[in-house]
Length: 338
Image (cartoon, rainbow, N blue to C red):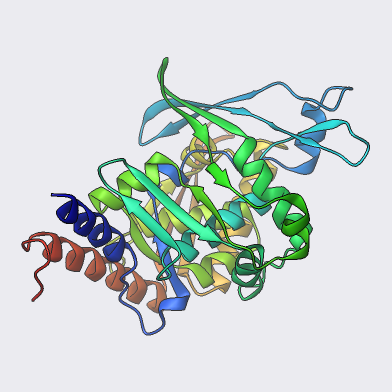
């Protein structure tokens, strides 16, 4: 029985590591439910406003919609000791978002992760150097000091997710972080560390609820909104083709992404257009149009219609094929292959 459980655990993780691509280094997996929790939308200016005179900060509560469901995420900041001995509050932001992507990619590499279906646990092993390399090769370079600080933020910051008024999950982005002592941490950037990933990722691995996507393309995008839109297309625009368009609204972006909180509505709509232009320039979209919805002379919403590029259509077909291949393999008896 123990051997059978071990095979099942290894089998689920092995499926997570299998891609349909000419170059596996360019692809990774996206977990829609986890990635749609708005936890990385903070800017330095926002964090500065949230800090009290003491340097601490109260938890930040943010309502959002997920597939029409009212949700709330409450983010308890990480308190990190500074060089003067005082503690300062930090919320997860852009660098932490990028490092999470790097760690999920490391999880897909043989020998750097483990998955336990019976415990609903997934662990990733990594070093500062490995994270640095994953970021650098995709144009998002961070030094070791920045990476170390971000790992601290991700392990100490507590996320509370509520559906309606019911709390359904509480935990850190990186849980049960196992690390080396401070001296070795600084001196040896190749030392391996381990962290348990959130339950949402473990459940997705068990239930095959993830999608292959182009991590190089995703990480090359300059803004969080552009990266969020790209991931949305990966999950929702599955049948991308020359004749199949995808429609979405400005109000939906605002309610679900939380990247349109600052400035006027007009400036936020301009921000969306800039992101769509970036997606077009990066080879994800072939074209897009926007249509204002008005009440009198006032714009109350905007409907966007996008057409996928040839490259993105191919990537979505590969993602669909990878999903079908996983389902076929799970239909076979354990340990068997075609």
